[in-house]
Amino acid sequence: PRLPNMAAAGSRGSRRPVLLTPRGSGDRTVFLFDRRQEQADADEKVLSYGKDNYRGFRRAVCQAFGIDTDENFVITTTNRKEITEDNFSELVQDGVTLYLLQSVDQMLLSATKERIDFLPHYDTLVKSGMYEYYASEGQNPLPFALAELIDNSLSATSRNTGIRSIQIKLLFDDSQGKPAVAVIDNGRGMTSKQLNNWAVYRLSKFTRQGDFESDHSGYVRPLPVPRSLNSDISYFGVGGKQAVFFVGQSARMISKPADSQDVHELVLSKEDFEKKEKNKEAIYSGYIRNRKPSDSTHITSDDERFLHNLILEERNKESFTAVVITGVQPDHMQYLKNYFHLWTRQLAHIYHYYVHGPKGNETNAATKDISPFNNIDIQISMFEKGKVPKIVNLREIKDDMQTLYINTAADSFEFKAHVDGEGIVEGIIRYHPFLYDK
Image (cartoon, rainbow, N blue to C red; front, top):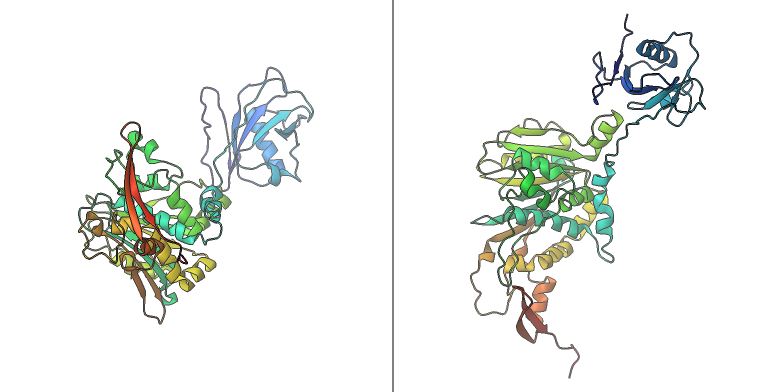
């Protein structure tokens, strides 16, 4: 009779192991090669074993290979460490390859194949931004992480015919849950497949464009427009993931494309990765929740109460994407609170020409040209318990570095240079006299 929680199958004729009984949640799958004799079966056998003792495991091996239980042989790892009662739990792990030999130092009578996995550790994802942003010597790197998320939103809204709305919400009201940072745009949104592709680290728009539905389907590089920035950014499938895991421990992606009735929601978190690793589950797998707009019935944690209001705002939105970061690092939260005036000016400096157009923010100009750049609206708001919300629009900031450069210049010189082929380099050189010139 077959022993409980055990199964064995030869792999001859099939490269995929087939277990003869269902695999229990606590079972270990072990790959075994019999190399006791030259004429032994050259292929592996696959054993599923659920108990945690060597004696029962050895009986299961004997049954699988038709060996008399009184026969003298050893079971070893591929490093020739003999399996015993003392080390069984340590050495016989799920997916291990083992040998049946006459002795530990016996020569291998024929070659074997040992299965290995080399999936990247989840730290590749959750710590990917650490060194990238800390390389910003002399400056706090947090604004650059937020800029990565704004870049993604600029790319997502690049086809908008009306207002391109990008909101950064700092949700620090502890009566509504634990701290969170949300970046919300009214761009084209993502299908569930596109959301899946967003989660793949280093899946660039160039890789994606011809192979399968991507978050930049049918990508075509836009035509150049003189002295303008076209939002043709977010190339390499890296920045968004680096940014969210630099800011916090978890990212909830919520998105709805214009032609869909459904909202698609995906959560990536360090806690979930750790849980999967502990339970020996596939780390890079998960679920996308497909739901109707404004449905927050799945939010049950008090730590995320703020999500009810955020999700309620989905009503009447044709398309959108929201990146909600939780598990915000305490030092990041303190920086965002204490230096709100500073880092918002840094973002106004970074996105100056997106917001104000090719000529920049000329505060001294008698009249301002109406340009298509007036439709980019980047707003930052911070909510704290018992305090009036701080709200600033990057367009309204008058003391960012670029605005100061433009409006303190004594003179300017515009130039255009043609290079080989169709390349054109053009811009403005501004003259700033030394402050103490006489």
